[in-house]
Amino acid sequence: MSSIQEEIFQCVQSGDLEALKQLLEGVEESQESLELKLFARRDEVGRNVLMIASMLGRSDTVRELVGHGAPVNEQTVRGYSALHLAACWGHEDTVRTLVELGADLQAQTFRGETPVDLSSIYSRTDCTERLILAEAKQDLMSYINRVKETIADSEKKLTKEEKNICAHVFSAKSDWIQNAKNPTVLDFTAQRQDFEEALQPVLNKLSALSAETPVEPTGKA
Image (cartoon, rainbow, N blue to C red):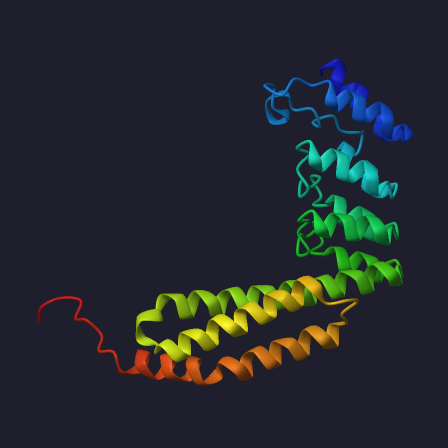
């Protein structure tokens, strides 16, 4: 183990953010963190520095580590991620930070528990609400992307007006997701319903055209 790994580990454990920043800034730009494995040091139960920072609720440290290449979705042998630990210890701000940084909401422990499962088990209500909201946002974004891919694959079958309708709906939903102030789970559900209703005629048309397309024979009789 390198001394830099140990120093980073000690800074995170002690909460010395300034010393951590100096250490990370001192690493030459040509030496990538993945090559140096700066964040490879683990404690006796297999937690890396990001997991420890998350467990302790040190959101600024979490941002600093991820900003310098710490993998946000690494898991212990038993499947615990940084988000699992922040959730079960009740650190809502750290949960929010990890979600913003791309933490996997569906990562599972060896018992099949997701972060929201753990926050519920340990009665971390604020974290549970934050994660449920994040899942609602993710579900809406995933659904929009699936529909967008479906329409893109069949774009030649649409009229100019239909293409304009799709572009407007996609743009409107993207703007809402980015700019909505304090949206609730119900807001995300309503936005999905509105999205479906707005594009239903186009999707119905594509579905009908797909059903009419003859299947190419796979071989000669």
